[in-house]
Image 1 (tube, rainbow, N blue to C red):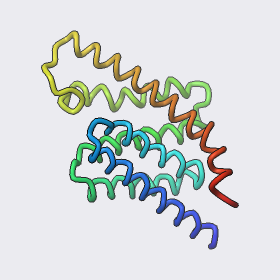
Image 2 (image 1 turned 180 degrees about the vertical axis):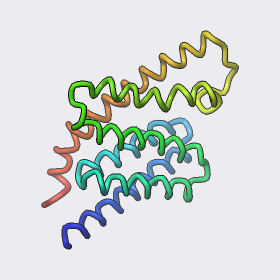
Image 3 (image 1 turned 120 degrees about the vertical axis):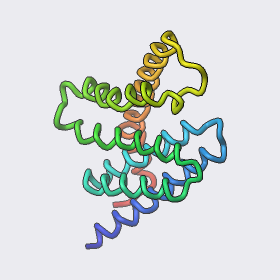
Image 4 (image 1 turned 135 degrees about the horizontal axis):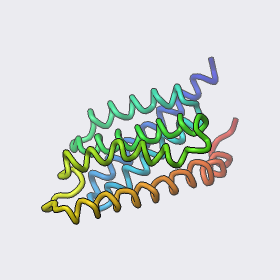
Length: 169
């Protein structure tokens, strides 16, 4: 019982940090995507520390809190989509070890390409032409690859070292 209470308290603090990071993106508009991506790392930490089941609960709680507390609901939607990717990719990691990179790109494109086709104003506010459409798809792939590399290096590289310093078992 004590261990579960400790995990729940830890997830509550992590959830507060995630919401504060997204809210920081609403205050400092120029770095919004940075703050949203940093908040999504909290879900990765939650899954790493507490498992997939509590990580899924963290995902639901983070989604609800961001939609309730944030004035700009688009930031909440963006965080939800990124967190959905993190949750599903962490679940696929052990199930598809050989095709994991391909599975991640397929998962990303299932979300990104329909959003880019049906709601391009979510990604770009200017006039959309065919040339920019192709460029936007390619830029999304590059941005996704960079995000995924940073996410993996933080969660599996830096987080274990940080964890040893700030947490006692």
